[in-house]
Length: 304
Image 1 (cartoon, helix red, strand yellow):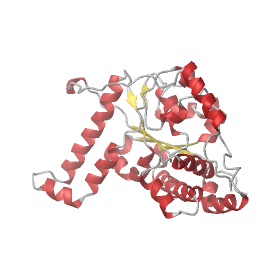
Image 2: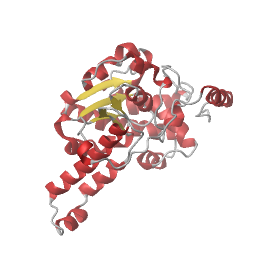
Image 3: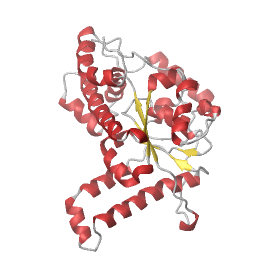
Image 4: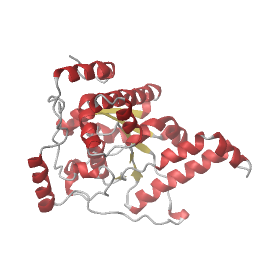
């Protein structure tokens, strides 16, 4: 079994040289200050949902390049709001100061919506889309928070490619949270561990799609990266926004730097990365395929 999970040394050197010459596509950081409440306008809520290493950052840059859409780096804070909402101990304490369940939800909703709206306002945009992979685990809470007007772009990538990419990050000690716990549980092979992780996370996404079909738009990384002119316009149509061909030149526009954005600093245009797992040995590919097969079939990927 090959031990190499990241790009070779020569490729890393070339990427660094390109970064020095061309500069990364992330060039600014907006400072969002407290906004006068009278200047606020509640924006339509939307979320880009996908497992880590599924092409969410690339699609985030595309969406953020639209004249009306602001897409911040990973926000993560909704996880803590979901924890507060689900804590009986916290609810009991809040009831003691007169905040019941309905009052708590309204306060959490107003807090979250204000954070996003202020960001969009600071960017001069009319709406926002959040891209935070960990939100796969709190989809029902998000839907409770933002209601029936919320829209979800559900992004998928082949499970073995995701597992390969996550294993490369894990090798550099760059993973935390539930994904890391999978690697600690399935110690025999990080790749198989992350195949299990992909299967479980995609299962949650597919279930959510099934329950909210009218408010979800499914797209695959391989499709939009291979043929962006065909697969990206329907995403904007789903959001009710006009298609702007300029979004395809996302690398020529400034974007705020996020936690995972170093992976795309040298990206220019669309170059799909597929079958990155081909260097695995035959036994590992076979086992990973057996793990992923049920979900791969549901998503329309060929299963040997």
